Length: 148
Image (cartoon, helix red, strand yellow):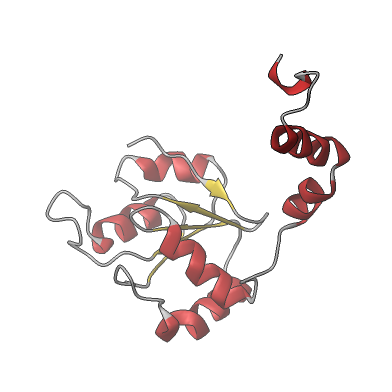
């Protein structure tokens, strides 16, 4: 699998399932801590175990934590522990699960960021060019300026 982090904030990114080959790349990207939010064997034997990933993370100087949130669950039982980790571990932090969604939701709950827009999302929503483009697309402007 090719490692493609999704940057949520300056201190936290999420990713889909990591492979054992990704650990060196993760360290090279500058990550300092990994949060594994996926239960072992969720996808069968092909999925690396948390113990394997933790061992490799340690070899690359990465802190590693495992919070096995089941699919469809919110992970409330881990929020306090993750909040403590967010305050005390080296950053940036990479959280992962099957798609990255559970890791992101757990991060948002633990950081109190749930429901808040990022600065970039807010700026994009206020950008006049973006707003004009959206208006043109809705109105299908007569000059066809958006379709050139």
